[in-house]
Amino acid sequence: MIIPINIASSSSSSNPKLPPSLAKISHDEIVLIELQGSLEVECNHPSERDGKFIGKLTIDESTNKPTLLIGHHLLEGKIANLPKPLAVLHRSSPAAAKVGNGNAAEEDEHDDMDDDMADVADTRAQETVSIRTTVEWDVVAVVKRKIVFSKRPMPVVNLGTQHNP
Image (cartoon, rainbow, N blue to C red):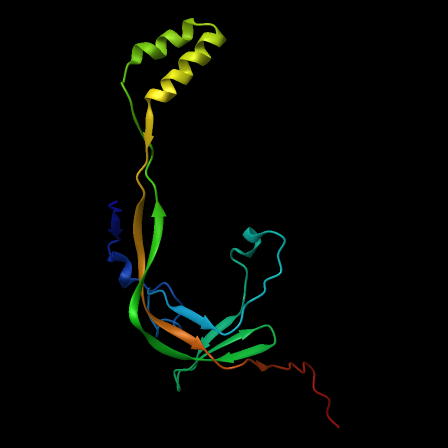
């Protein structure tokens, strides 16, 4: 089986899509974030996770170290190159093309028939018509780097108002 893979044009690489602090990693490149453990997001349905705020990712300008603040936990990481680049693929399937005998006169006959006869004719027509769909994959991006957070998170305590003794 041959699966077509389409490569998108890189005409939008001149416009940065990320904030300036993250543009030091890349302007429009997708970067993996590797975490130890798992993230638990409160939701009743999986679609509620879409677009939900998880944390704040910043990169220190002097040390070029990324930090990720999730709730009351601070993760410190490093930027690493992947040994082999990864492609991010998006599945797209074009509209189904009907292949059959192409007799348009049969469709006109269905209008004149009663319901029982039309059902029999429709069943016969469905057997002769096959629906062929082809699946295509579009390359959305190529991932070359990752941000690795391999250490345990540090607790962050926000004292709010400080008391002076």
